[in-house]
Amino acid sequence: MNELITAFSTGIAAFTATNLDDLVILTLLFSQVNATFRHRHIVIGQYLGFCTLVIASLVGFLGGLVLPSHWIGFLGLVPITIGLNRLLNPESDSQSEAQLELSSSSSLISFLSPQAYSVAAITIANGSDNVSIYMPLFANSTPSSLLAIVAVFLLLVGVWCYVTYKLTCQPAISNLLTRYGNGFVPFVLIGLGVFIILYNASLTPIALTVSCLCLTGLVKLYAMNGQVATSSSVEIRG
Image 1 (cartoon, rainbow, N blue to C red):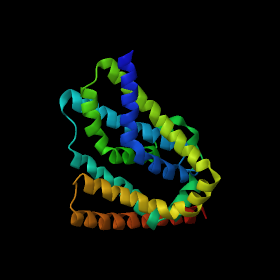
Image 2: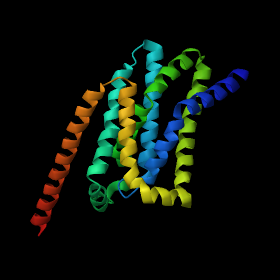
Image 3: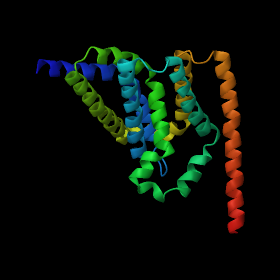
């Protein structure tokens, strides 16, 4: 019994210490919910990303096969790309909102949707240091303690999602995020990606700058192609 109590308290302490920054990221993500980016995408993505981190920690604990941190750091390019897209193509969100209300009710589509995987990638990239903390924690646990810790982790992921969702429901916070969120979120995502890459020493500052410039060009090119495709389809219908 004492072992389980210790495991529960250890799980709560470890999760809180390694996921406090996720409260900010999740709050910002929940503030961006619209017709194509739903609450379930955030919850599913958060669970997918966190489960990946736990599995990586277990694999590393059992076989020493964890990816080097500088490889995981490359996932920082995902929030940078999302941030650049929102910054350079703000109209793309409203266009996709109008187009995709249709099939979003399917849970399978939500599970396989790129929105959920984008959230999962952000969670993994932002949690790259979690693996280095969870591995020794798991290594010093008995099987029953390990199960209890993982159960606590999964429960607290849901608590984190619920707390941040309720924060965005508060009128003061909701009004603030509605007024400034769309302009603020792209810079937060870009800053998060830059921090992840530099923290994990995945790229030098110069290489990171060049990568960001290349991504900027690709994002603009993608937006231009999307506009051409949209106008062509409108002309065909006309």
